[in-house]
Length: 396
Image 1: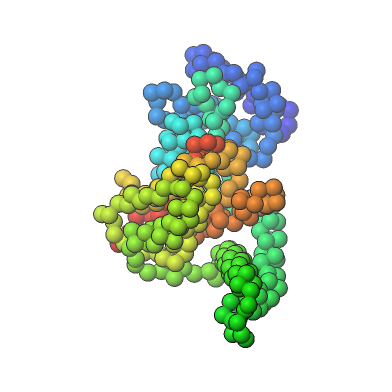
Image 2: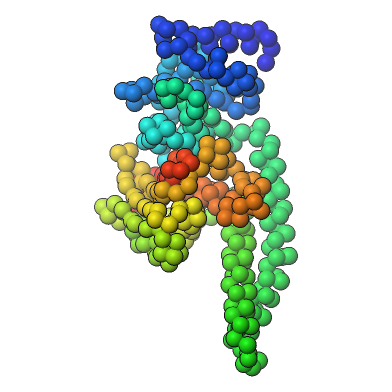
């Protein structure tokens, strides 16, 4: 950014502190480092505020990259409602609309959130945006939030594209180099378990064979899931669609994890909207999605905690499936990268329960194949809510 443009932009930002427009802003004097970085990062960032009685978040400030992405200058957008710039029309082949309910919940509870948020730029074009909202933690009145806009199909996202390419190469190698010897491990361990060549005198040896076989099956399932994640990123991937009962699918998923939940002392419950009996989609893969959400919730919900699956049709006709827990939750920093392709890879050895981070990436891509979106609200110590937004056109 050249010096004249920077000086012009910062002079406009002082309007935020004008008592005739807003209450005096603290962030310029309190966050010297933040103020410097604010304009230099390559993400589009806006600062919004929400009054106690005002349900519409107001834009207070934007950085330079926000101007480049949206085409709006500060004096054109400052003081206007965030909702003025969200695309209310359906996006890309009836894809689910942005859910303002998620934004309202994040602002009211002062939790971080990530959601699909198509944005209308100055030229009227709808941008494919994922938006992260996080509280401005050092606020005295707790009214301000930071919004980060990320273009899903940005050609400038070289780091993410590089991570995708590395993962594709890795998964291609895994198909042969991992599955072939693993099938041998499963076969031989099954022979020992079945005592095909004669009885095993030591019962403990038979138990060891069962453990080996169980671990091998888990590893094989992981490899198959990773290979499917690779296929999701190709144009040849197709859904196997059919009409099925949503309630029945959810109950099947709950049944699969009920034993683990009971062992962990976690209560499972379901609140389904029975007025919408059927959905048209890929039942098997949507079942994997729900199962993945439940397994993640179980990992991070302590004994005595609760996990609730609920469904509802909103006023716009879209269908929402929510998985809510009151577990450990995620920080704003963790939430900002939950859908990245390299999420958690650095944490495998320090925290094995975190996993390798492909679960939510898989969930997002499967739901987007159904013209839907995924939103997440979370904060440390209060739990996490993952909401799947499916377009009303898929209801039967």
